[in-house]
Image 1: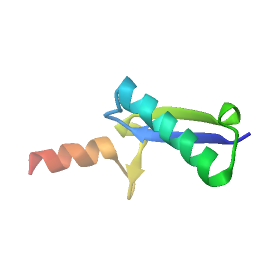
Image 2: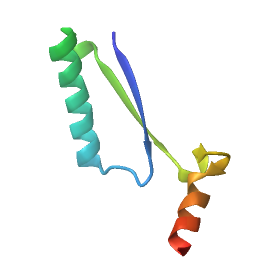
Image 3: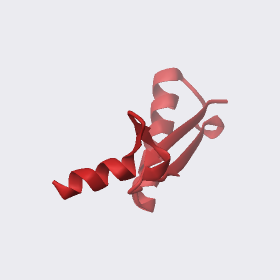
Length: 69
């Protein structure tokens, strides 16, 4: 059973976009890898900008700095 976990940086996709992403990933695995759609699990997780960092700095801080320029 394929289990796909996708983490999305906020701002998050809306419900319709998330439903389409789940459908697209399911279709890809089913078609390309011959997996049964009923056995494919897709999990979407929204991640806050302060939970992601680049070069020791959170994305939240990076965005604040860029917005000031």
